[in-house]
Length: 176
Image (cartoon, rainbow, N blue to C red; front, side, top):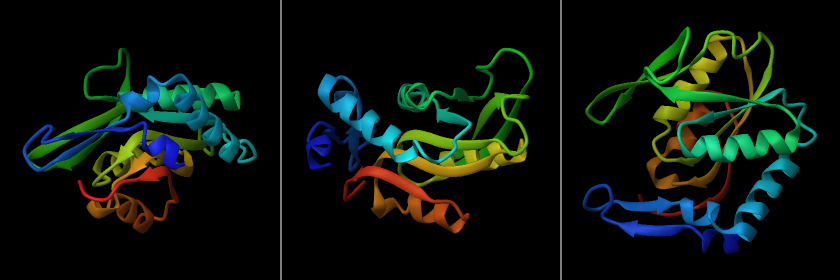
């Protein structure tokens, strides 16, 4: 998938000095690259008996809904606190300075439903870990966690594996 890696722009010193930001919007905006990435992910999960795809706000919505469409299943949006109308349930998680919360609608997942969790990138694993806990608290069975990009130096995938879940990424980048 080196050709996909080449379509992901690197922006130095964003959002702060020393960070190499991996911008997947350049891949998403490339018609051939986006099609190849989504097709590869749909092919990976076609035989996995997935009932729904859950995507983490915001780029996880783009990827997750395209994968859900390809698999012929529904999509579950996982949003930041206070963004969902109606009754929501959530999971708090730690940030570098403080906490945040991820939420979904009550009843979005049925007990035993097989869910694929999708986001654009895994760095420290904090958001993905909270999403897993949230989905499991509603009775979901996580089939796998799926990302376009893994930043292995930040050990997020390792953290998710320690929680007992498989991690798949199309590409990885050294550094952070």
